[in-house]
Length: 428
Image 1 (cartoon, rainbow, N blue to C red):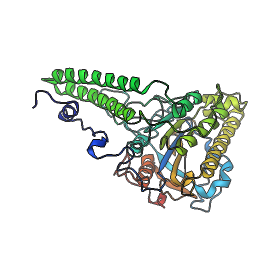
Image 2 (cartoon, one colour):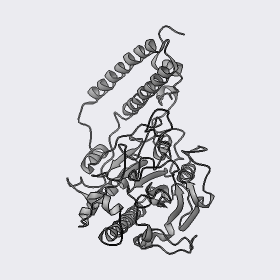
Image 3 (tube, rainbow, N blue to C red):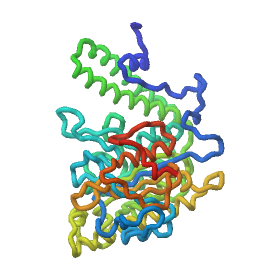
Image 4 (cartoon, rainbow, N blue to C red):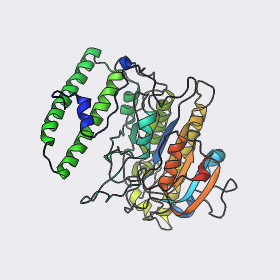
């Protein structure tokens, strides 16, 4: 072993594989990678929208007796009628390890077993959006963007819908104004100062790794495992620094929308977040987004009195009526997003909708029921067969749907979470 190993040699030595940055001196160009599409061909994108507490079981799910293209939209999905040929409703899926009736999104995109690590009562694995980000996010300023609602009742633990490859929560933003500035406002700090800040952070990482190398010698296996996880965290920081460095002298895209008004809540908040999602995709600032939708503030903006928790525990009467109104509003908002994706033109004349996969749903079907996760898929990005109602065998892993999407997006992965295979009826 060399007496003066450099950072990346050391990381390889610990068994933590790390990819070298796309250095131009090694023959890479800034916007060229294995994930890039051919010149002139629009890139694939994906968006995940999680709604937390679930739906009104009696009025949201279509009739199981009518499947395929010849089905009737339910009352809760009726606002999507103008897009019926471009959506697919999936029934029968669940996350087998999901056991928390108020955690509508914690394991929604991971399908993980929360007890998968002995001695821990909370564990997770990588979410589907972050698997996509590892490939489609290589060539964009932001590998992925995580959005949160102004309230998160019904969603459960986590900082967003997203979880990294260590099963650690990925942070999200809940202020549309801050999201706007993150995407489109220039950094006023001089370039030299930003370069110096990155260099300083790298020097800190060097010092940490040097100490880690000395500490690791002679450790027991359990401690070695903990230290390896720690090194993974250091590697993640280094990856972010490398990405920041690559984009230091590249101006941000011009904003295709006005700065949002501050303080928007509920329905207006969701609408502006949708506009920001479309703007982020349109400007290729990112190709992967997730959004935990608000619950309580949505109800308040609709002048509904019951709390989002009580609405989730509906019974015939005021709570159930509020639940049904919430469902229709979600469908109206999803239809609005589809409208905007279809109306946004790509350079080749196609629409943003043609190249974006969108998933909408929850871990929870309704009340405390954790089977038959409500799932709506749309968009052409993942080569899915749209315009149909699928009723899959009971307790089909929801991760089978995510695996089918991942492969349709061009991600070469044989499994995800607790998946047992792809859903062939979903493939176009």
